[in-house]
Length: 502
Image (cartoon, rainbow, N blue to C red; front, side):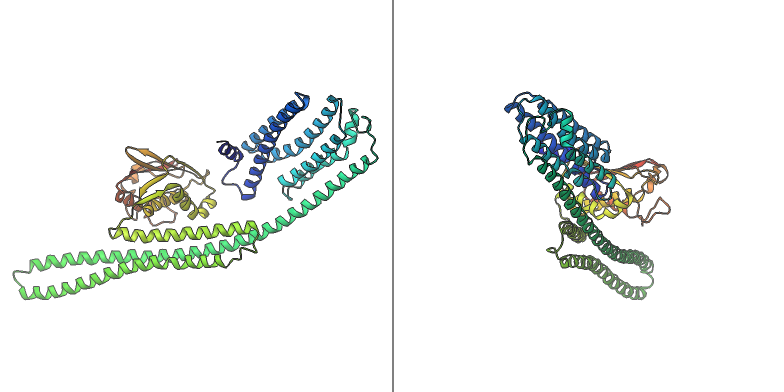
């Protein structure tokens, strides 16, 4: 429970629409505040047990409220202010505890003068960790605070009458050690700045790798267009098949009308009909084979992408590039799984539906991954609330339902506000309700409601699409034994609810 609470608090202020380095800095600030909060509590307890309820205990406990305040600042999106507050407060609190401790304690140990300097030296790492090199003003300000306290350590203590020499100490090496701490501060800052500069160069190389991945995504988009073109050819062939079936019916009616008068002519027409039937069966077999060929050929581009990923030398890559390439491999593997699911759809169309336990969390993750570019382009916010996380059903159908509804929400988003998509699953009437809600342009159900789920029907001008998405959602939901309900207001958004048996 503590770990879960820690994880939740550490994500305060983190937004999915943020850039990766911004999310990392906020997570780092939150975790650092939680660590310092925990250490402060433990330190207060240790001082109280070993020394008693001295003033240092109350000072340390006061710092706990500051670290909680930093977390609240991040949650309210004052990220820069919260980081600068830590960089200023921690060394200031160190100096305050050092001075007040020497004032309130009658027996001051010589080591305490060097311990506070050591803490100041360590706290100099805070601005180096929390700020990027391009945030120069805040970085320099944070480092200047530490350097100021370290340089004027003796002078500040002297103002309160508790300096090294004022308390009766007289080691000849005190000034040398003071100078040594300043030199260590300069060397440490220089080393960390050099290290951060190396990290920025590595990040630029990472961005170059990202461009190469975008090129691969573009190649994948071209292959997708080719597949769409083949699908159009398949639809046209199906229309031709329907026309041929109508022609057969007409020929049958004609043969029945002429049966009594023209027996010989009927025999000739039967020969023509047999030939037509053979041709139709041949076309049907060709169309079925064509469908299998499309499903098989889809795996070619994916295999090429997986092959390119495997050529990448993981041993020579830095951790960030290695993680990016692992994500690329994961995306390609996810696409490969989608292709396998398409093969299952072909089996279902032949009457062999594959029902299996479906992990809805993993399924939605795969759907959102396949729509990652669209989500990023739309700067969409996706909220998930899954009361039901597993469902016995046909995985490919559920994938298609979520994919079509989420892609429609992105495609028909409102131009004047941030795209918001809410996905829910909940028990309902002995089954499960899958809900996809958006705040897009909406649909006029009074005008278009009777045609909403028909094939090739479109209701928004200037938008890409062939009018198949909602038709497929309705057909697949009914095959699974469920039904689809829709609520929508023009300009406000749309809510689709798919009820499926549990």
